[in-house]
Length: 265
Length: 215
Image 1 (spheres, chains in turn cyan, brown):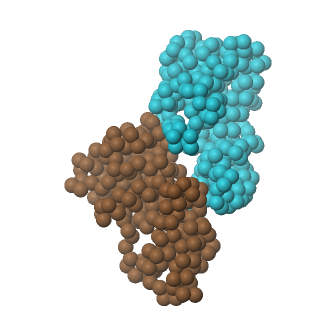
Image 2: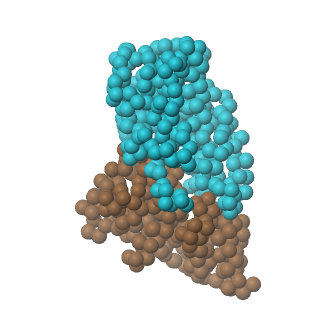
Image 3: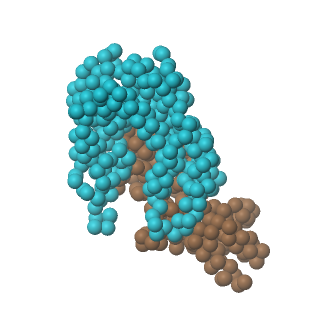
């Protein structure tokens, strides 16, 4: 398997990207912890975020593997790559119009999650939870940067990308991870797949990004552009708009939405 | 400072989540010759009970509850050796674990911390726990409650497998509570779990209620 570490995406190559400085969405960290403007002792949580942001960003090792492959055929539940592998799931909706797909695995390594575990074990709840939330956001950043790298390549070829679609979400079995891991040299970035198809380090993100002619890619046409699931990070529609979801939440692998009655309606 | 004032100050330190003052007041109480069980019951657990009540009333949310749990944990580092020396037993024993196939542990760790804050002795089996291991832990010790966690729809069915195994293998299986991102009360009812925790704090509340009923 050829590995290109110079960031030059090419069809058929596995490319290793290193992200030296991962951006951190502090609002995302606050959301993950459950902080509200009215939180008692909120200052303690904010102080912990302030103290930990820099060292944890320094500890995170942002890496991604990306591989672009041509699509041989795309049916509603089945995507066949030109060189043979098959990916099953709601691909017809999530990757509609794709002529190529980018397979990717992004991670921040295990340093931050190990620290978070140690703090929680020692009863340092605030630091442990803040570290876990920061790690989740940094992993999202690594995945976002991988997505941006694919988008830059797509735009330079008069194409654009679909939202990413990950095993374990919205009708794609987590077992489809095995296809991604057979196509990418995951060990190069220290990511392994368990027997139950979960990744270690846990703070890793994998998925498929569709690449389609720019004129055919309209974000609202894809399920994530229409879904208002309140707990999904890929949601593009504000939950407050309550347009109704286009997907079956019971099948989508993210926390179920709260009932509207408990949301203070 | 009177005994009542010391215990009230300790309760306040727990309610406010003051991790500096809580262990200091435990030390003051010990210096005042209060026995460890009284400090635990009337200081720490009484404070956590108020925190639980505020959580149920909607005045406290998870971040506030966790800050209090941290203060409780800091106080327990001072009190635990005395509890051991005076042979004071925990209110109840709980086994916690993330079910087979699932490697996510943040929720499970928070539940363990909250259960300790509610006076439980916690046996943490870790992640990727097969049903046999839950059953074995219940055979090895007198266990009052089992708490299972799963983060994925794909690993949720392991909760049902573990509950079935406990029912099959143990003459008096302890009640099981379940929680985790995709888990709902309806799912808990469907698989025969005794309780469901929407988050770590409500999980500890449910656990306390179940053990109080049984005890």
